[in-house]
Length: 112
Length: 116
Image (cartoon, rainbow over all chains, first blue to last red; front, top):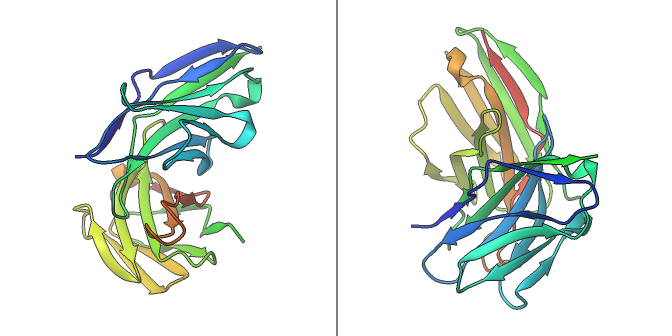
């Protein structure tokens, strides 16, 4: 069965500091992994995805994610956090069909 | 056009009402989804349509009835809902695997449903 886990419900970081939002996955075969962000009362916005190739994936708004096969992780990172990055972040995996599985979400607060 | 458009943005209905949520995309995606989301929780999959046919129904109560009239439109018909059905209903679409890669989900902004 495919699944992703986000071990932290809440992450707080000071503005200007690097941020990391963690995600681990459990899949059979090669994973298709995604990160989404959700602002209050909005839909989910796609940030980036890993399909194959380079382990470091760059996405929207300065975010990047590192795929680590040995640790089955796909952590979201940004070198310098902005207050406007405060939102709910979801990791997701797509199985070899049309079905996506979402993590439980991590609420990121960037403190001015 | 990379948008998924959902209407209405807000809907308030009584438990005896019949209403519908609508979703439209013009990206040529042949997989379309309905998700239900409660506050600060992940989206819960309700239905998936693949090439206009219902391919996944996650044991959703029959008071929710999906419809896919054509490849661009997706409806969710609502009847005799309960207050616990109040939530944000999200529509999404994606390209199929193998057609342009492992495409991501494109979400609409959602329809905020309140059942009184």
